[in-house]
Length: 239
Image (cartoon, rainbow, N blue to C red; front, side, top):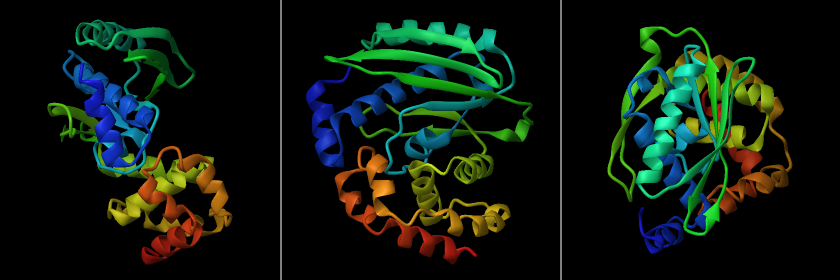
């Protein structure tokens, strides 16, 4: 396991809470081991954590989300192997629960790092997938050896994020859209859906600050004071 002081220094450099960095360290370790397992290529990484780890969004995220063809038995076998390897690599991790859901599979694990324990939720959405639905992408963490993940094709990943905003309307979804637009990641086919976003943007900055302050570097906190206007301006650039 990496030295605690190295992650403490990294947290200072990134201007964020130590917990955010430790959690992301565990996410990296999980993913790097997971994608070395046989059959793991069928699980396509997506969601806010994929935006952070693969596309370098500044927003730290808590969960690991995937899309896959239905196969809970296969996932549980891979998960058990991952937990064994995490233990060998100095990150003992307890399996709290692992169960099929109506639309996929849900697992909750609890890594123990230094004197810290926290939960990582792993959520899989089952659906039929074409060969083109996945992309192999190299990930290069600042403090760990690089590894390869299988992500949901970028256009599909971004489309899912946009439609999550339209249905959930959470502060993190609005910020993720802001980053997607700033990074020019939005597929052309999804631009028409942006017209619905303007009316949905809450006009109270505190709505965003309450949740996002915890997950953004302190250098981004000033942006939240004027976030409704800044997001609307980004959306209007693509309309």
